[in-house]
Length: 331
Ligand code: COA
Image 1 (cartoon, protein in one colour):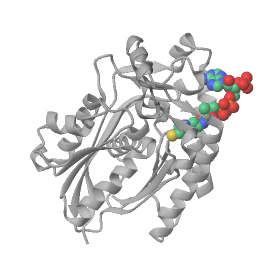
Image 2 (image 1 turned 90 degrees about the vertical axis):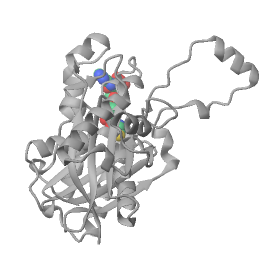
Image 3 (image 1 turned 45 degrees about the vertical axis):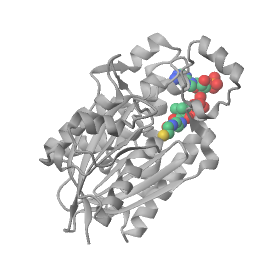
Image 4 (image 1 turned 180 degrees about the vertical axis):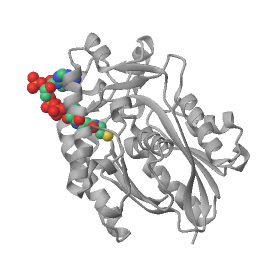
């Protein structure tokens, strides 16, 4: 049976570092509060000229290089993002163009922080059915553009960045063993960013709105509730992945969780009985980069030689939607 194997990874984060101390000069917060409640010490913030597609492109080039794959060999381009350059075209189309990938399919995936795991599932369906042999999957976000920088309960959490993987059909025992996805739209209010489609305007309103500056849409979040649901849901997602593969947590060499909050990561690891030495954490340096968080973490894990051939990796994510999911990869 064909498997989707990750044959190259890459990541890119903007150069500008915004530390907790920097934030404390802008809003009523402190390094101590942010560190204790979230584990985050700093995050990256894109420059005014940087775009989501630019970040995605840089990560994608590195992943292609690591995989020794030419753009012409890519059959499908996927970009998981909640912060696309434009409503349309898809950011994946912009990446496809700038990379010089031939005109096969290219589209974005909207599943907020679970976007990368949703993307793994889509890539896997294309590969397993033979519709694609080689897939480029990128998670890229510019959350600094959609946070309300006056809301201290959300703006301290997020950052910008991109991570990418190249997946290829493989007939060995390596590759994606399972992906499980879930969504519960009834909980959309926990975490959201409104867009144009949710705001019915009368013709008169439209004329008035055109005369006023557009109001940027920003993240709205019920932090406490989101925290509780995240811990519960991530444990379920991990257990579902383990059971489907008849694995025990002790079989997992590395858990790469979505990097949202250190306390969520620690609580999930504890519930699963996994020591933190087998959990990859980099949110202290990047904060929550939404769909980019897992592929950035994976790329760093690869570069730090945290994964050996044949070892099992568990990914898990949770985000707005609500959406959540898990995946197991034999490296
Ligand atoms: N600095 C200082 N104080 C802050 C603050 C900040 N950045 N943000 C909030 N506070 C204050 C609150 O105003 C509140 O003060 P009060 O008690 O005087 O009203 C106090 O800290 C406690 O707020 P609370 O919201 O209960 O804190 P918390 O321990 O739940 O932590 C989050 C808040 C946001 C860190 C936490 O709820 C969380 O991480 N939730 C999950 C968010 C997440 O990961 N979302 C993405 C999922 S993909």
